[in-house]
Length: 185
Image 1: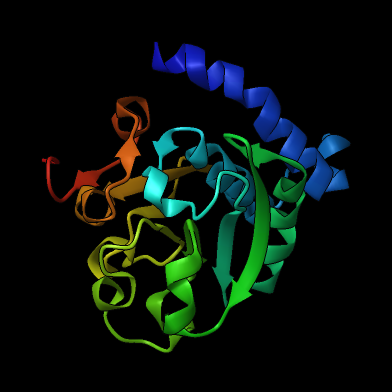
Image 2: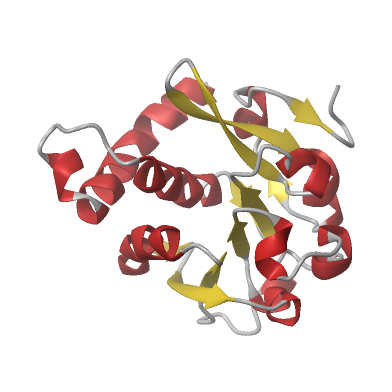
């Protein structure tokens, strides 16, 4: 069942990659940043945010990027899309106090937000946190990218996802490389 849904999502991922990286459309191996951007967008299709995460029915779905301009540029292709009727907006954040307005936060590490404790920065705000840091799980991110057999995969930390009151599809959890935290092994 999870593979059927992923197979349906593949065209969207490929379209996002092609839009963000013309070389990928020409058959050249996609840049790692573009692949990660496509995955971040696809994660949103497997996560449900609480209604309170949106001030209005037409409020934007905000994807924030801390300290990684290439990632922000790659994610901007998602601005032509929507999350369940909400227009997507991609913005840069540089300070911890800007995170509360985000629905998704990508940061190479917590240092991109000035350091400190990610749990204290995000708190219980409904923010899906994603990182490429090798220590993403220890830093408190919900999803951490890992490269396995030359393929981009992810680890999941369920504790920050549950604290944020995000409903994550079992399909996304099942295909993660490692799952830690509340409800995980």
